Length: 405
Image (cartoon, rainbow, N blue to C red; front, side, top):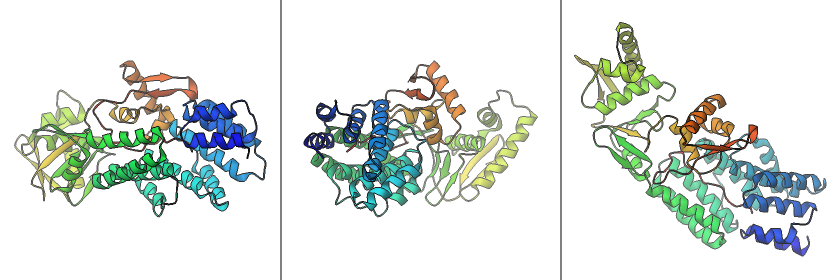
């Protein structure tokens, strides 16, 4: 490897893409193409970066398997940063295996971290923890250590383990300072701010904003919690998901907001079914849904009938609280993902939300008409984004994009 290539690689590792381009911008050999691609990715031109990396992968000979694998890993990171979640795990797994077989443990670990970050992004926390388990960042360079600790912190935040998250972020801060890369330092600072901004709101009688540590304490308490962030109910001993039963969750939420009072049948019908005038068919349907909800919640609470309606009676808890997103509005889940400031495709949002792409497209069209999101590009290249909501933390927490080594 000649001196210009070595100098360009060192510049990229230090977070200086312009310095790298000054050395290899006019060269078209395979190593230069790869470095140019990574530099363009660091500068934010992901389309050009992908083209250059693919050219580099083709230019490397059949005996240069490690170089081709590094190009695959770099392209996978570009896909993750640009929120293209349709790339298959098989390609990066094969690249990781090649790198490990040839002793390139740092880049193999980087490939594994990309897999974990993708799983974290789409909410598959158990799989993310399984892949991360046993990985020791001690022998890795500072930038890779930062990535490891940011992922650990992201998982801890999603699990509402704020002490573990803060400890991981402190380790990430130390590693980022050692790396001396401004983008890494900014990413750690951004993650720290998540701990200090509201992540949810206590609804009902005493409305107030909640930090992640407040949520952690609330969920660990003996309270019966109706969680409108995840559409589930819980107490200290058990959690029951109503994510697939929206009518039942609305009824549970209305009863939770009114606790310890009861709720009239007409009010429940209006909230659950959207009907302003209740007739006998609505009342019959309400009785059916109440019966279903009693079965779902029988281990945690009883729903008792009163003269005018129904009331929620917890079996063990002495308090009922309702937790919602900091800002509630239609298509809030889509806005929560877009609040990270990155540009998303509708297919990536559908993958992350676990819904159909057509449903996401309708939501985006509605938000676009209201001026809450904006798009650029056309067809498959169309991307959606919105400025981050100031002062609020998304419940969908994950580490952001890291510079490519």
